[in-house]
Length: 214
Length: 375
Image (cartoon, helix red, strand yellow):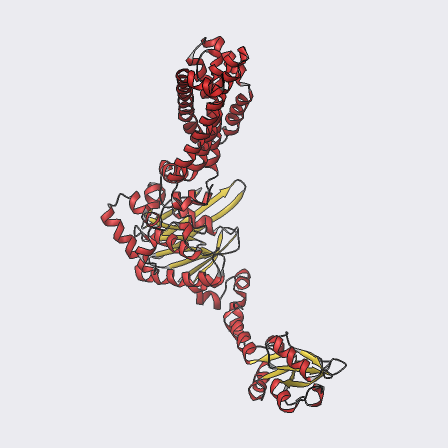
């Protein structure tokens, strides 16, 4: 059976895996964002502990995904929940890192001007720091999304489904078609999501900031 | 009115402000000046409470500023910084309207203000309001920076070296504009600079600070005439020298030293070529030992010269010469009677030191009178 025939015959299963994959990525990146952005902002307010937290997060990042999944499996058993948990944790770091650096790298003169003309701390955050850090933060979300698309293939190992299912099946049965049926769509998904975020980002950037940050 | 009462501030061991007491009258343009580290910027920032003094009081219109809400206080005081600090994510209009918006002015109220202010600095609303700061020149950006400070019509405006980063020509036109606006809108302006030119040009009152203390607070005129401290005289150096121009200036100070010279054996065509290349119409002729021999102009070559002759044969010796140390006044007289319109300046050993033309003379006098000019 050629690859194309394989895709046609198994389109329903592949589509199902693809949708599940999107769900895994979508939910974990969103969760990661909801944790990382506020945490990143918080760290810019208490900069003394920031290196500690960032280093800790970086350390977690270096633990192989397989090991983390193993732990999650031991603690929470098989299924969607442990997979989402692990993926969310991995999704946090790039966003956290970029939120923190994005805000701390906003030029001091803008902050001084903002404070000097009478903005409150939260107005400075909302009107100056976040808009100026936005492209960096969105960059973090983009990195996070691309990584999560590939990490999510591991989730198949603990029964969370997704394109990983096809890949693991293929690996255990020496069936190249299965492997490619998982790998090709996941690569395409990564490229498409990355491009999409980039496009949204460009659309949202005011003219005044274009060329200032890529 | 702003009144400092015994205001002190330290950072760790170092005392930045040492018991400052002074008053700023309403409607005055007050310039804080002094060497770097003298505490001028710190003083400025204590007014809108960007910096809290350790002790002492600052009264604004009789109210202790420490009792006021800092955010509200800052909204009622304009603030301009050197780095301009226009928000790059906002248009010109949004930048100017930022304080009125913080104060919840409705659009019907702030938009006319924006239009009026832009007109005030000659930047028409239609053309400029929807540009972003990155689309403006440095000078235009700082104009908008000033307008942002004025938008909620604060009676007091603080400016922290606002023109420090601008080129001299732009700086000058902004100085004039700000001065004009200040007079027109009757603002009290407190202005920090380290540039004495700027201080003398702008100030009603100059506050000279050093080491966290005020050395002198006086009008520019008074400070020029009676500087209270050697440091102040030093700061005003060239401006004070304007008061004693007459004293002992010599020919050397007026001359230009880049002069076209040629040996007397040089031939006609070659010397014409040389003068054309340098875009001049006369040059100095030297003897073999480099001493001054005479001058030759394109006109004399044309009337007397033939190709192949040496310029020494028909050079002129009618141009007046002066010694390097000749008194400026005598030199000036010789210059005006010189048929060629210039005077040759000679060293003691009769070699050529330079030329004095009417242009070089005028420039040197201007420098002496108004300080070093932009060449």
